[in-house]
Image (cartoon, rainbow over all chains, first blue to last red; front, side, top):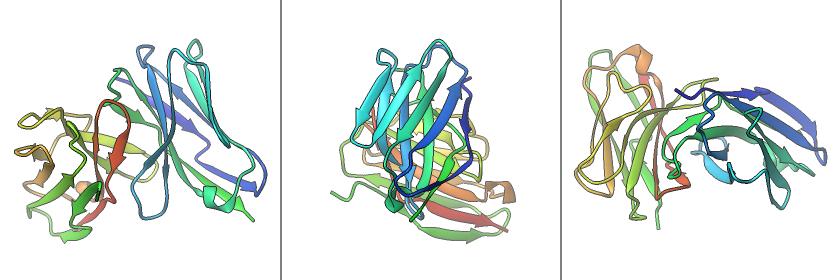
Length: 113
Length: 110
């Protein structure tokens, strides 16, 4: 089955700096890669996703890059703000419906004001 | 729309007791899922359903059963709770694509 590794497990940045979280996956058949943000006491919420036919996708201050050859993908957050503080999860799925997700272990991001 | 709701929010069980967690969604989604979340391990899929009346095993199904008698509801059952089932349980629903998660149920088994 699929295995997703996520690094780092914790990340502390100063407000305004950039943050990068990296994930690797094992199954070359995976073709859908979402990123979820989980705030304290809440369920995860999708913030951005990318499919295997795209190398990069941006949405305002967040971007995701995908390298299918190396089987890794990354989340980039620019101009971080205190409200970006949360746990972030990457995931990978091998079917187009995206309904068989394997999650990484999570990254706790702390943005210091 | 309430989205995805879960009942109860918290529960403490003794080893060997049984309980049912209820998930409800009002988005007319076909797919529903149950995950457990443990520190450092992300979310792991327990069981899922691709439509009313169907269920399938996920990554960690042992010790759990599920039922999807109505499209909007997905029930997770623990027949004989064990301390290893102490976790936070999340339900999610989706069309093909984005999964929408509920607020979670924190379960402690003593």
